[in-house]
Image 1 (cartoon, one colour):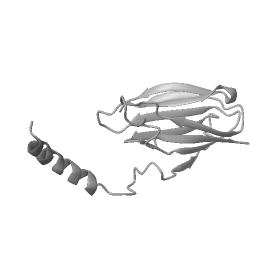
Image 2 (image 1 turned 45 degrees about the vertical axis):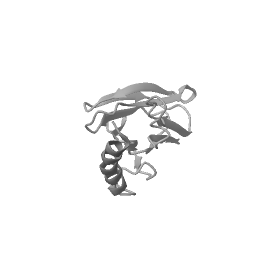
Image 3 (image 1 turned 180 degrees about the vertical axis):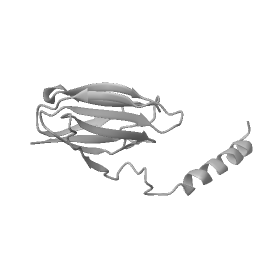
Image 4 (image 1 turned 90 degrees about the vertical axis):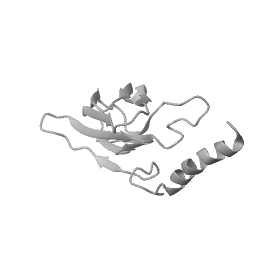
Amino acid sequence: MNNAVRYLFLVPVFFLVSLSPAGSADDPAQVREYTAAIDPDGVQRVAIMAGEFYFDPNHIIVKVNVPVELSVAKEGGLVPHDMVMKSPEAGMEFDVEISTTPKTVTFTPTQTGKFPLYCSKKLLFLESHRDKGMEGVVEVRE
């Protein structure tokens, strides 16, 4: 393929990327906070939707020593995602592949504080999904 043909191929791609709206609803920098209520059965339930490099909500507030059930799914698309949390000292450790069918993660937080959750996916030499903003925090309160 000669350089002129490559240029003609890249111009429409560049144009489409430049038209994407800044600060859209799926802006990873936007904080989407959710405080979990305790259901009558004593469980705090949170539904999380994963999209192109974001979690919604991405700041989850729960109570310490009360069971938590996260239901996580992703929007359609081919990009694979997962949700990882590595805070065993606080009773929260999981690594779950995300699909369009919701999956459930359960844990009981045993320590107060803020604990990160993130997508660990990365394609070869590109930025990881976490580096692109696909991360969040579980804040555990008294």
